[in-house]
Length: 118
Image (cartoon, rainbow, N blue to C red):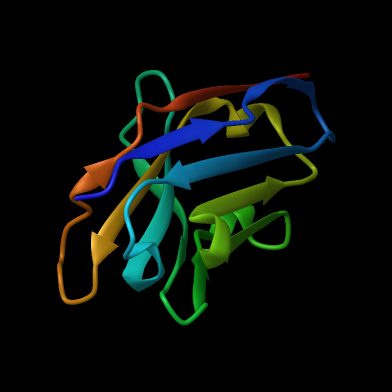
């Protein structure tokens, strides 16, 4: 198990930037696959980005070229740099972790609000 705590959310104008951080507890952070998800009001939760233990990345189409996921294993932290934000990026963002070989993200942060005003 790993505990996850997100930070860095807030209110920003369209076109602005935010960087989300997710601090993880535990000594095996580097072995986890880390993901960022978001859920907007009235919508299903969607995966935004994922970074593997070796650094491979995935992005959902709507954020490609605008968001960057990265990790610092020495700091047990994963980041989501969000640029050129749009009002449709408004959501609660969640950090999640899963072990290699697991199909499910078993560890979740509490979520953090990101609001983009037009």
